[in-house]
Amino acid sequence: MSQYLLRISSWAGSTPGLFGPFVMDDEVLWSGDITLNYNAEAIYYNAAAANHMEAFLPYFRAVLDFLPAARRMASELYPQCSNSLVFPAHILPHGVHAAGVGGGDLAQKQIGLFAAVPFILYWRYSGSIVFAESSLPFLAGIARFWECNLLMGEDGFLHDANDCAEEICLPDGDLQPDPSVVLSLLPSFFTMVAEVAELLNAETAETRQRWRSMAGRIAPYATEVIDGEEVIADFYGGETKHGLALRLHAGGSVAWGGLFAAFPLGTVHQRSEKAAVDLVHRSLARFFKQWPGGKQGNSFPHVFAAAARVGWRAEREGLLRDWEAYLTNTSDPKCRLHSNGMVLGCGSTGLENVGGAAFATEMLLQMSSGVLQVFPSLPVGMAASFRLRAPGPVMVAASRETSGEVTDFRLQLPTLESDVAMGPTVVRTDFLVQSPWPGSEILVDGQVADVRSGVFRVGLTEGRIHQITPAAKKCRENPNAVRPATCGGSDIL
Image (cartoon, rainbow, N blue to C red):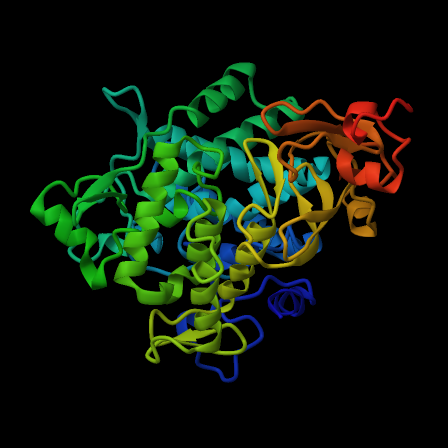
């Protein structure tokens, strides 16, 4: 249903507004606009994995059409940041935007950065050169804005020292430096803009190298000790009583930053160091303590997918049970999710909740540190099959039985009509894969793969479906097809 809502909302070529097609009268909250401090972007969290690449295009047009207005805002608000771009939180066509603090940016510097999230996802899942060319003016303008606003600290890291994590730094207007949302997005952003500039031979070599360097020097997440547990905080500065009060307003959003540390572009995943994964696990536990069942409306597209990405509460009676209770409204009656995805009573939300389907994708398929893994967070005892798109891009299909055995695993380079429409692409043909059969030899198209630390390499050929199986399965089907040791000591090759 979520993907259906996404497609019908984008069908006419216009980017969906805050409430998509569900505007029933002339008066609608926030004018039903394109809200860029997460709402408009979250719509696309699962679009690429579900292979709805064309659904992104209206959003890109809306953002790129706003560039003249973003340029004017930057020159007025940040004249010291030459050739940069500044986006407000609420935009409409023809350069129309909300008024107020910072030209309507809600004092959040993150807006343009967050607007880049769907661009980053599309690039990862397409490699389209035409897209790279059209996107670079936007990406480079945002990069120059952050070059101008990040400060090198005595610790050797780049800090966002003058910002608001909450809208207008609620509740009292004090600064909230190093918002975890910003810190979670900047590494992926600078990595992409450097890649695209390199591909197109744009900017100077010095600029491209500077952007690559900045991607690796973003400050670590601020943390706070709450009830004896260290968790990721929304921003830095809460070691004082006043700072803690800021973070715990409205029931305790202190763990909001913990979600972004993992998803949608966060730096922590199941292949991260244990200390980092444990920190995100504790942050998620804190969030669910503050919001039982995960029922804080603005977090629906983030919290479950973030938990799946780091394997938190992956047992059958864990996170999945909370997800089902959320969908069926069997927990916290004050917070209701309607069948069209809108939430009322716990932070009223709009079409962004279609992005919550990313939770299912994260259970089925992940690529962490460049390694593909199937069923990374699917609860034990659950059978599943999927065909999804992964960064590269590559199409992945797999099936798993209730016993946990993976019975079908295939990789293929994308060949759909929509991929052809993207024009020339950067084609990646070499992939690292986490073995779903620990301890077994792996066959790729019948040939024994070199498995090291549970990871093997697959080289893809255009137009071919590549079959991956455990050697033991191949032995059962044809004991003469593989090496003797694999088939129990037979001397027949």
